[in-house]
Amino acid sequence: MTSALRVAIIGAGPAGVYAGNILDRMIRDAGREVAIDLIESLPAPYGLIRYGVAPDHPRIKGIVNSLHEMLDAGSIRFLGNVTYGVDLTLDDLRAHYHAVIFATGAIRDADLDIPGIDLPGSFGAADFVSWYDGHPDVPRSWPLDATDVAVIGNGNVALDVARMLAKHPRDLLSTDIPQNVYAGLLGSPVTDVHVFGRRGPAQVKFTPIELRELAEIPDVDIIVYAEDFALGKQVQQLVAGNNQVKIMTRTLESWLEREPSGASRRLHLHFLHSPVEVYGDGRVEGMLFERTDVADDGSVRGTGEIVDYPLQAVYRAVGYFGSPVPGVPFDERRGVIPNDAGRVLDLAGAPIPGLYATGWIKRGPVGLIGHTKSDASETVARIVEDVAALPAPVTVDPDAILEVLDARGVPFTTWEGWLALDGHERALGEADESDIDRERVKVVPRDEQVGISRDEVFAAS
Image 1 (cartoon, rainbow, N blue to C red):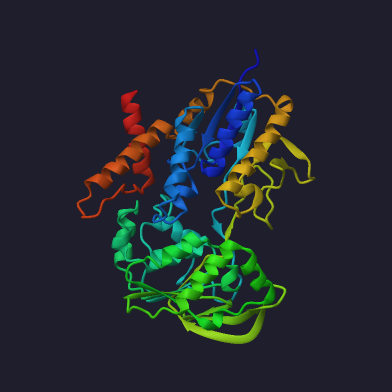
Image 2 (image 1 turned 45 degrees about the vertical axis):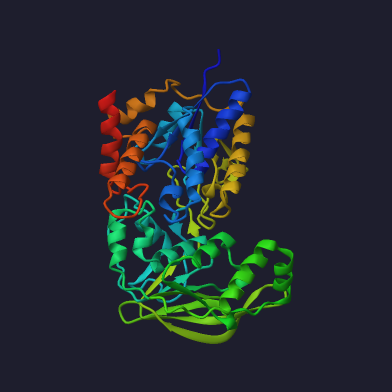
């Protein structure tokens, strides 16, 4: 009888979970058993859904529920708090699995190469997101000492960062915001948050839902500027032919007609501004932008007009970038693992047997959840095609990898451990004495997450 196909997936975000779920179904439909281990460096699953999305996005709960159902079905084994390249090497994985899928994502900020971008008071959005989402490996405090702040970018992350900076902390208590983050935001003196994009209002990357959410923030005025609404012919055609763009443009234009209410905080949306320089004597004191316009062909060009904004902090949200994966080829220019439809390629462009990639580390940090699913399907289809030629591991014993981790003193967590941690965080929310219903309070320190996950599970076993 043919032994079960053993596959390790590195990364337990949506890309990894979807790949595992699709792989389980396709291999079983092909008449063979499969054993899948989902290996994650953090103690908890879900990746950027837990640690990369603003906590006030309610529709993210639906994605979490879907991922939970896939892992709770029991066909995928979760091994958390295990760092690939440290706790387990590629040689270890090859000795225990027929194939390895890398779903490590993209968590670094893309560079913004302008003078002064490294001044104190200038931050990468990814680091700030990790802080307010309670990532266990970032500092517990954040320097929130600016009254006027710039956010560079016109995508979802830029809007998340701006909203989290402008929102009053009390309005975040109904989310899973960690206590240290709530305390930090309480001390913020911010009055004005400015979001800058180099393109026009019809070319933003966020969606109508995110845009409408801005208008619902209590005690925050949304301010837009008439001079930012120049539209080239091609952009006018885009607006007319795309319902989503039409809705967003109409929403933004409607805000031009609104008078500020006198709110204590303001969120300014600036378009047609290209960053030129961050300046300051020892720390951020302001930023220069070149005004742009949109040509008839839709391209953006500089006008030569320079505008100056006094600021005390700058957050760049111009995209994410992948990180090298130990033992695997890496494209430094694109920030991805070189691959052909998911098959990892060596430096000569030939597929490396048994190695695959999916998600942002495969295609770059673009696309939404739907893209992640189709991307995983493409990679899994390659594995199904390659099954007969996959290199055989030294052992097919499913417990052998656990013995390796135990022997190395790695305190790995499990799905049962996550359920214990999940229950603990929900209990903290129920016990909160504020007058706001809190669904959960996120546990931040890694050792606490691991302790809760392991103590309750191993005490019961």
